[in-house]
Length: 212
Image 1 (cartoon, rainbow, N blue to C red):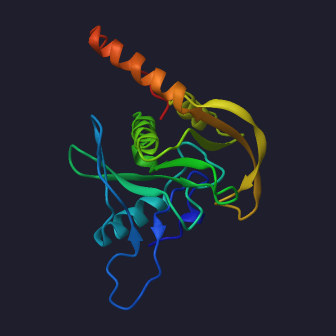
Image 2: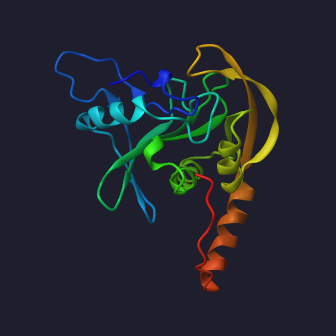
Image 3: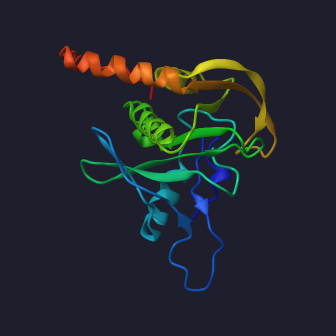
């Protein structure tokens, strides 16, 4: 598979296992999640060529300065697939921060041909729900490159709130880059979920303007 760290500052690699002779599963993905348009599923060896092709021409959608789950322990990763047609459109993940393993971070990567359709927002919302449902996570973090306004709109649509600036590991230049940090607390997530359920009950089916 192609080098993820050469793809995007919002790149989201799977949890890589040591490769052995005859090993058919170089990446370890877990679980399945359904959204209106997407299926987030376990990765397969057969996915490698498609993901590598997409990664070669991709730009980041949500501009994370660091990929989630940099720690070798914990976290889950998913291949993002369109339910209609079955095309792979990206990857998402949540897990411990590389530099602060006690904190949980989320990341989503959508290939450039599929940008602008709200898939990053839809996939990120789904993985947020799974992260909060999985164990005792109380706060989720994400890191957005300062220069990426589209990324900022995605994470804000998902309920994240600005927490401050800093420097983060770049997945493209192999150095540190300026980032903005955002957090989403469980209580705020629960309120947003409740509010969304009420909107559906009230029959609000108006299309939403997603950033990516």
